[in-house]
Image 1: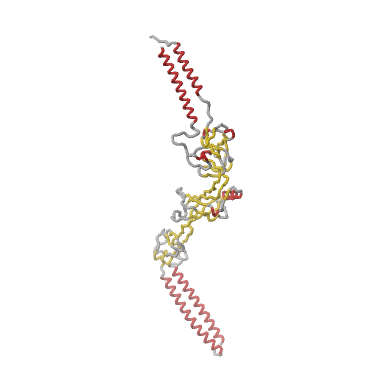
Image 2: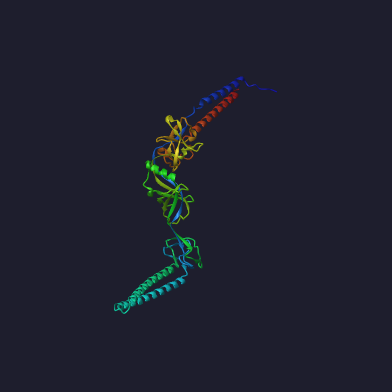
Length: 435
């Protein structure tokens, strides 16, 4: 078996080429670059103070239609769920017994009135006779007393007639208010009683409609304190704007206004009732619906807001943010937030006006690290972002700002290494061919 030996000069040339390529690869690797992060500079601005409270709707007026006389229901004269007018007849109760009672009362009244005429004539006659001593003084006094009793009988008869007429009128059961009827509790042929106050139906006025909200006494106390300290500006509780979020998540088209806030705290729940009123022309709101109300209670003229993408939470759930401090070094800040405003958090403490908060490239920044701050960009308008920070998102296909430098350098290093490997292979092939 014959083994060919490679000349020593070829091995030396190939080794030198590989060594030179390796040295060239080390020399082409650039030093680590300072990461680029997008920042927003927080400044005080005016932010509405909004409270979101749970509540339920209730009718503006509620009238329970009940029987006021005893009797049999002859007919129902409305359709359940329809709107009715005030004074419109809803039920007809059998009026026959009450017509008879009215006729009896009228007859009794006529009899009393006839007796009054007789007693008046007797008194006039006795008055002349007693002057002539034709009758005794006692007889005259008895005639006067009988006259007075007859007059009283007439008044009693008139009252009986009025009562009979009222009871007869109660056989026409009318709606006390204008509104929408509910379910009928009786049917024709049912016997109803005034003594039991038999419920016939319910009429509710739905336009406008009330919304009864529940606010904790702690939140109310905090709001009043902020107003006293001048942190909040408000025109008064009756000028506050209220919007509703319905059960399906949609926002109700009409805005309401506050009517009043209860002056006492419920001892069992520690909350107070706040009532708002809304127009309800289309009858979208029905009594008993669960809603959430957003109440604009005032404005905070010195609020600091930070985009939500720039706020993270630690293991304890506390909000934190990374801030570019002096010498462009990253600092970690603990925040205290009081709610949201659009796509931003409202920060009560932890930040100062002029602080530069990192919102783009948060994952690349670490506390104490040197960074290169640039204006952040958002794909949507963000409260608290101004100028270049409010610019639109990069075009499709382009890399986000602050994340393009590192991939480009890595690709360059890879290309350099590939080029060096290709050069060394070419040198080896050329040496072999030269042999």
